[in-house]
Length: 194
Image (cartoon, rainbow, N blue to C red; front, side):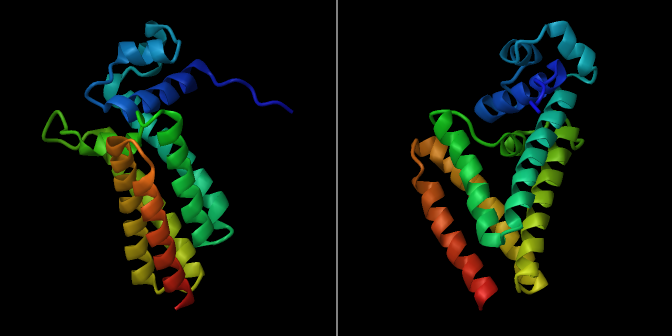
């Protein structure tokens, strides 16, 4: 059974995630996203009547769910396997884009919101980080980590990986991810074996 090709709406959301991961939210326009996704501009406004914030929110959720699926699958083999998979998916994005793309969740998180209210995209980013932390913490607890230690280590993993991705882009090499991977792996092993 073959998988059907993504719908125009799915292509637009994935295109927005890609554009945000490369340019950031403020430098990503609806028009450029439609062009990038090879979708008519009118379709973009049809599917996303809330405009750029709605599209950005869905792009963040799309990325969050995609990474969470990978984590859930790989964490079945334990937290070390989950960490390796989490690092590998970001490494692939950074390397395949020639260090031009990073994480759209982080990109949305670091830009100043247009108003004093918390925009939906920023709230979605917070939820995404929390989901990733929860998945990692759950696996750590299942493998013997104390609940508070598991929560703290999960936060460290997400923060370190996100920061390492940004450093890789700036330095145009994968050394930050490599160093982060080794240290986080050691911490996880010490936590679950100790």
